[in-house]
Length: 166
Image 1 (cartoon, rainbow, N blue to C red):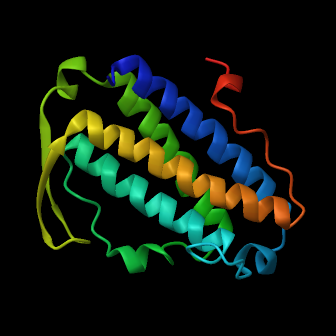
Image 2 (tube, helix red, strand yellow):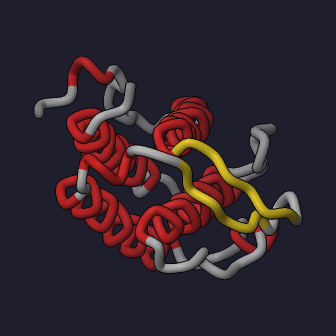
């Protein structure tokens, strides 16, 4: 099952991969980052915004700070400026890593309850399941961004978890 070491490893992997993708995206023009490429959220920029929005929602829930208050559709255009988006992404990744390092292993036991604005209902689920969802969601959409970057001629780093230096 999920333990603190897993959470720390995945938080580091998350930061490493986000840095790789944002560095590769920085080699493209703003127009290229915003080009519709047929992915679920359309463009590199919009997918980056969605990922940041989702990470902030889940991290706030995990920290007990209340859900980050922004509707999912608004999260697609959360940051218009790529520089601002990059800065907030880095700060969020630092916050995720800090949360992982400070995590009390006992917190992993039991369920987390929250109100889902997306589903419009109260939810409750195993914290371990939600942490797996959190990191899997990031990996899923980063894979889409990686493909879009590659098609645009940018060169992100390899994505294999085994290459993470811990």
